[in-house]
Amino acid sequence: MEIDETPQKLDIASRIVTPGTAITSDSAFMRGHGTFSEHETIYSSVAGVVERINKLVSVRPLKQRYSGEIGDIIVGRITEVASKRWRVDVNARQDGVLLLSSINLPGGIQRRKSESDELQMRTFFAEGDLVFAEVQSYFADGALSLHTRSIQYGKLRNGTLVTAFPQLVPRSRSHFHTLPCGVDVVLGVNGYIWVSKHVSASKVEANAELIYSDKNEPISDDEREVIARVANCIQLLNRMYVKITDTSIIFAYEASLAHLVKDLLTQKVAAELADSVLARLEQLA
Image (cartoon, rainbow, N blue to C red; front, side, top):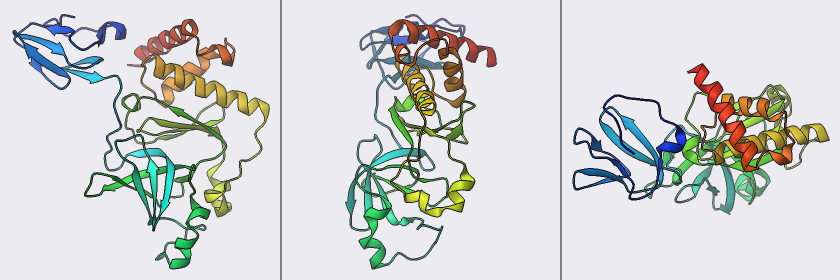
């Protein structure tokens, strides 16, 4: 694909390249990440999307592991309960670490954790539990250190997990959204997205035990259908390589109402809904 001197809007499909694809032979351009140069021509070294910033041309890989930054909001799965810490799968090269000292006890109590707290660690988080946390720092080996010291963080219930490409979930001010359809969505920048029944914050504050509860609340058939529809909308956005934000999810949900939930992931319907979402997003731009 040749890149012209003047910037122009390109269709997403035409910007996806495979390893060895010639991007441009214009000497005015500089090669960036995901490219290599040979015989004065810039080629793609990975399968991904061509991006251009002024005269710098790079290729963003279609698939890559999550690379964390301090302040990131993530969704993870507990993989191990160790001494004074939990290991958490965060879709990165290595598991993250949630220290016992980095959580709040039921009731919002902040104090030094005792030996009895260490013995009760599985009552807070056990293997297989999904957690909503924030990246606090890095350890010397590069592992992410997490914390759940806010009332909005903690164990996730009443829903389903959807996995997406991390690069499709942009960093923003808020990653917890209540959609107009009555569903809560947690957009983890690590590509793990949680879709669940809406539970008001006031209810959680009134009953602090809910933070570490393992029991799901009663979910009606209508609520289950809405959760499944939103989850399928996120999957089709991921499949069609569309940015996953609260706005794009709402647009996809509204467009999906004309179809059955089970049909949303068929290639024809997914492409149709993705085109509809992209068109509406371009109108907002």
